[in-house]
Image (cartoon, rainbow over all chains, first blue to last red; front, side, top):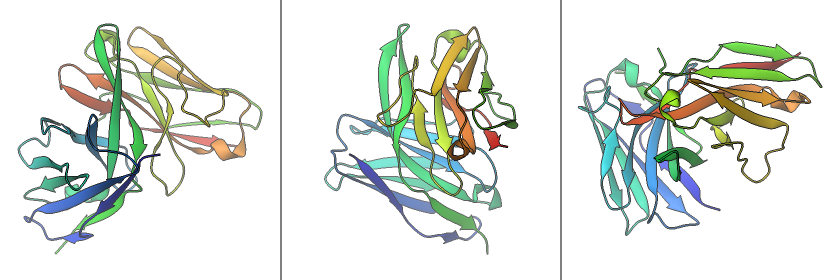
Length: 124
Length: 111
């Protein structure tokens, strides 16, 4: 059973860069897509982006200019960086494994394993 | 404003059946992308509940089922239990955004 664990600072100052790492255990990071999802306090889920183990990425257009996701297969980790943060970036950040299957001629992506989440507060 | 629209809340008595709708558009559900459902118990991470056409991960009871029609999908919960009280989210893929999208979430209250 794969397990995911987020780590990183819980407090970031406005205009600085938020950095988080997700460590994958109980399975290899290879052959899967991996994603970051966030949830502002009391609100719903927002997909941030995903990365394939080979390094190819796809980002939410609303965050694309500020987000970078990278992968380190030697450490079985992938990471998130969000630049120029504001209070609106305060949220619980989750990492998740992405699985997919083919149906109706398209890939059907879903998130089958999640980390416990880590709260990141943007405040001076 | 979420790309997928869910009712903010639903409720039902123990033993009853409730449904949660998820409405999208021609670039996601209407384009043939399936809806997947997640359950988030208070203070915990979301958990995959149903993926694709009524596929349930191991351990998810068959009281949970889903259906799809046009640009909408629905999650049905039968034999409602107190432990089902949680937030439920739908998720799909949107071709115009080239990424995953979520509904705003529905809070289920067991009366």
